[in-house]
Length: 314
Image 1: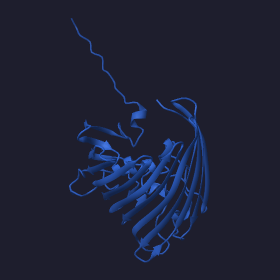
Image 2 (image 1 turned 45 degrees about the vertical axis):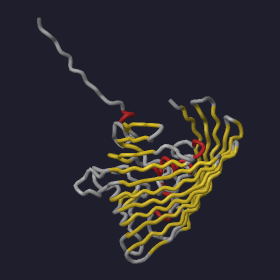
Image 3 (image 1 turned 135 degrees about the vertical axis):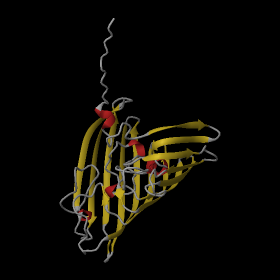
Image 4 (image 1 turned 90 degrees about the vertical axis):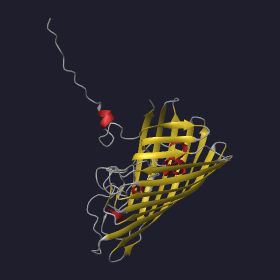
């Protein structure tokens, strides 16, 4: 009796390879959880600044649709969920007296122990409708190399990146309002994923540091259980240092979102956003307005963007 074998072909669906060319482009982790001792997870996952600080920012508050217009310029503080951390260990503590802590370490997985590693931690305190958050993150050599904690989905590429975040949020009945501050510093920067074209400054020097301070107020109000509105205003103060001098651009970003839930899984929404840049005349696209919703930077210091869309949650 002769046996016949059929060659089986296996192809991954495009959807699985669509996020950075990875099978698991967003999160993929395993771990252990205990109500007494907390949760310990291993794998590719979001860092504590996303888990705790982004939740009260304009990028996430009131369940705003992904890619919303309230993100900071160039998503400099990563509140718009741009990257995850590979090779990471994360611990989330149990809540004690209203306080919850979280810490993460992302291994470099490279020849240099500190090359492309991440250290991140955050603390959250809740009392009634009040939520207070403080967070910190440091990335060594973000975006450099193919191995490590943050590789080709890094927002910035440079020698080091540090983020400091703090905020207060208060929820009362159908209303929620928050005040946040975030500071981002990049040493010896070479690129940002949202900054196209040449980044050579007009003074002819080389970049030594980019720093951003974001001051934001955001809020949301449920007009009915199915219909809510959200708005935010962010003032971003930049300091861009070169070997010759420095530039100080300023960004004003405002957005409004209206959302109606057709069902528990389907929503329709409309967004509008406006940004104005007080140009520092760097000779680069830092001088042009650029909203996260837009397909690219404006040709001027002003940009207005709107979106009308539907979301269905599977």
